[in-house]
Image (cartoon, rainbow, N blue to C red; front, side, top):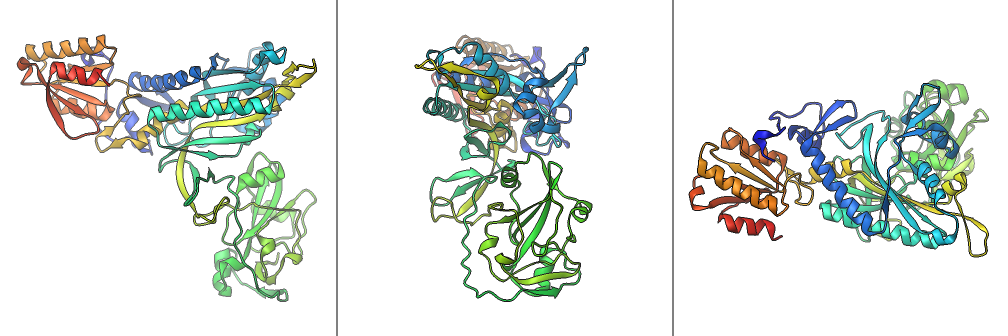
Length: 564
């Protein structure tokens, strides 16, 4: 690409509406631009990076034996209704109707259509296994799009689906995808962790996430200080280490004026927060759920949703609490508690190992002290607490550590969920019909792009790894009016292009400092400067991630770049 003949621009000032480093740099580098909340256009340089990422993934997918297809983005709504996911996705789907009032959805994901497509080619066990994948735009009406390309409303996803005759076959197919994902992210140069995760609306037997480690990640990755344990915080089990040796005391109601928060109660009673139990109320799919957990913990809503079978969980309002129970906001407790029949009461399992704790008395300005498990009223007992850093590892005696991550890929063992729904079956060796076993695998190229920038940047701009860079080499001409400099620059440009090296020739009539700054901002891995020694066939060679520059002959430069 010769810049004097190309669409190219950069921005000097920081972008106020981009709150992340990657979002700021990608916009400043002229690679992407927001058109509205959560919707971006990919400009030439940005699209080249995105395509390079896709090509890496495509290479490893094809090497695994997967076959590429393309599904429609516009999907008849009944497919999602039949699988139960129209309701599960809730308000996050974009719905529309055609001129005949038939309902459609802009596809948030495509398990349904892949299951249907697979059924066309499956008759007997001899037709299995196989793997289909695509790169396709997905649409999700995010309530709070943020962090540039991390949480958006329209994005490209590489989604793949494996089809096997049994779980043993799924294990083999899953491992192939697991290895292909590792190879893809390794080639991109991303620092990532693989964690066990919640399967969410996907459902299934097992879910794992590939998390790029970065401070702006929305997910909390839980690691162990000793072993290789890793998981998403949403599913990490809390290991109870409380050793309660207290003799049980007599329950007593005590006046606690204006003590509505757990902190106020602790200060007023001069007690330890670990001797308290607090209440948290949620609206789960329109029904009230009262949760009681140790005062020093928070409710893990993902765990809670699984226990009660809910999709959407929000904090309950004071009116919902007052209208559905005899409790008083700020003083709610599981003793003498009366609720409407549809209200569920869930107690964290740690609470049942505590003695002589403080809870609300369901009466304004009053709490109970010396409460014990046998005093409580509840429907369910379960692990509903979020873990904290320093908690015990579920696998060993190590301690949990947290890192922030961006989910760049996920893998699911779906089992027969979609095969059962869409009657995807095969005849086994005994000529009996059996459901096909599926796996689902996703990669977000845009999130990979963001992760790479978050992990590879400095005060000058982006530092693209060679494999994903939009162009590998930038040739900067100091004086474009100097015939010798332009001749040498064009000679190098033609030679590298003949070797299939993607090159930028900065032949703009700009000051050298402007050109250097632009090439650093857009992150080209190698810069070759053609200047005063052009008549000697000598240029300056510099890597983007190094300060040192070398003076080399043109032949040596070509050799260094082409022999990698």
